[in-house]
Length: 333
Image 1 (tube, rainbow, N blue to C red):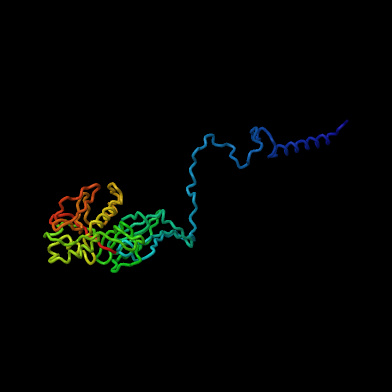
Image 2 (cartoon, rainbow, N blue to C red):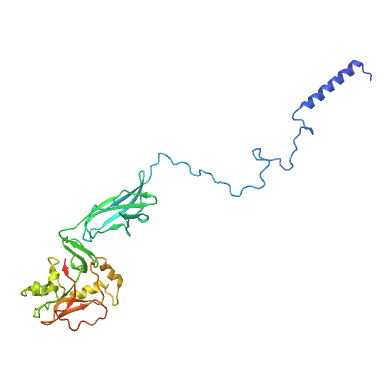
């Protein structure tokens, strides 16, 4: 086949243009501009680091702000100390009971069991209740976590009249008007009984030897017999000391003193320090174990009965009325 010169030149020009287009294609894979492909990575996440750290930190730093800021519209919690009364009598009976509440907005949760209550300035209450033995004004606050309640004021006064609806048990403190003592006997309903004085003395039964007739099993009757004697206030120091405690106080008879010892010792046949402590927390004069106490029970014109505060003690064999022994007064309520 014969070609003329014009056809040959046209073909050469077309080949030159095609070659130039191929050379300028950016997607063209040539050794000069082609990126080297990594075998086995055809499905790699386009967002994944193609060159991960070969030694990653096993304990990366935590988020410096793991908890978002609290909602400014959420109210702060408030601790509230509540008392069931704002008045408590100083007689050991009208006890204040406390309640500690955690209030958050309209939500209230009782946290008394986990809170602590202090009688200011710093006396920690062992239980959420308070009973006064002295008249005065008392202030309390509650603590829970880092919250502190507002203070509660309790006014304690001395009742001037015994309330017949009060109930007592052995070991209770009693304070009405000028009469203070510890309960050592009670009736079945707890409304009546006897109290023993907080203090004691060391005195003779009498300064004279004469028959009084104090043979009753009730101390108040024996006391009446003593008071009938001439110059009894000068001649009968033990009975006079009891009478000075106020209206209704007297020297107990033997049987009443025996009941006092039984209550003081917890009714057990061996020494009971825990029972003693119930009384001693109120006593202004401590009982010395082994001491003999005068009773109002008379024996003869020159002797009266004593009772020893100890286990298996032999009663004093020569209790002359002019001898000094311990004296405690008692009173009925």
